Image 1 (cartoon, rainbow, N blue to C red):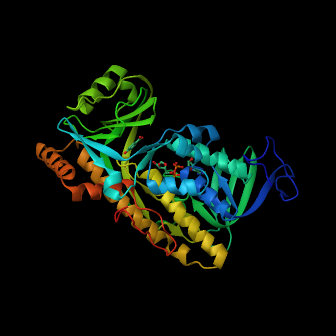
Image 2 (image 1 turned 45 degrees about the vertical axis):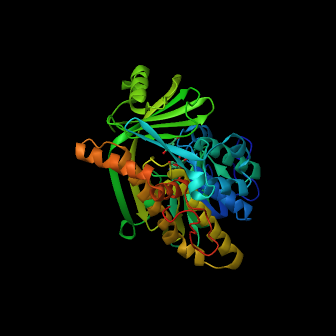
Image 3 (image 1 turned 180 degrees about the vertical axis):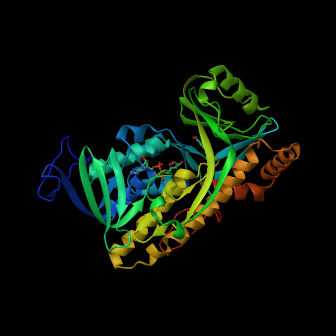
Length: 436
Ligand code: APR
Ligand code: PHB
């Protein structure tokens, strides 16, 4: 085994390493063989590796960034019921169950009023759990390191080859050592900016995209959350979202321009804008605290079709991006790899490629359901720069209908909590939803 994150510091070339001298015996390529090479150690890659390991399937994870970077990257924090259930069933849900905050509903605010949508009641007991994506990533990395299976952080010059051949090849450089991994399959879990999606010839790939003319200023504040549940708000001044990370940390978002610099937002300006947009007539407004982080994030929708090309399967942000309204990104990534892991397991267990062949179409069905919902939430809750008063009044009417119709609330709740996973027959069985 060549040196990876799971081994002590220092390069080791041992018996199962084929050291091939290249440049005057000064340079060696460390060769490895595995069943699945996974590119990227975000939620998609790490969850896939964990599920495969539990089924006795070997993998090698190759990650460009450092372990610290991957763990500290602050992202969304809403887990659907199916995501929580999967993590618990896979033995990585202990801390999530202890520290995650279960929410049985969510608030929608407009015209100065808050309206609660009760997920548990409308969906027969489903809920969401607030648990930072980086916390989940931390748990998954720990689980991976515990297995001793290869996980290479800080990998550079990652390239894919032989995707049409019986064995795909992944090459990369890690701590000045060149590596070559041969694999039956490659899982492209390397996010929107990765190399996997671009490795598919343009003639075989179709990209569906939409950019939004606004962005989110994300704020992390050391303040006890002043609402037990999330508050999504449409205001004349733009969208605002009240969320949280823990009983001591409030997470907030403000609609802003995509070209804005977070540094132009002083703490005073942030709090006054948050109060102006989020305050409601029941006395709710965010509690102030020290702002420990602020950053602007753009918003887009993207779907790449197909999600399989030859020996490579795309999963997570590598294949699709949703705008963050509705927090579907992480959950879609987990849904993809749960399906992919089931398909790969069936292949090695029974020699049947049926689920692998169905992966792309069935994963895309869920993806488009989530795209629909994320697009609807985004366009209904934001003020477009070229939007008219008519548009605003129509958006308010849409929200009035949502909070006054049980049918509309049920539809919203089903989409928000997400469909459960059941891949045993090669289908998404939407026990609570038909849309995501
Ligand atoms: N080689 C190796 N690793 C790479 C490369 C590369 N060329 N390019 C990118 N990566 C790594 C990134 O550093 C990142 O750690 O792939 C990982 C992809 O992780 P994510 O971007 O978190 O994507 P994914 O695992 O699909 O998770 C989706 O993340 O973006 C959020 O909101 C999104 O919550 C959703 C989730
Ligand atoms: C978050 O807490 O970061 C969050 C919550 C809900 C969203 C997006 C992000 O829709």
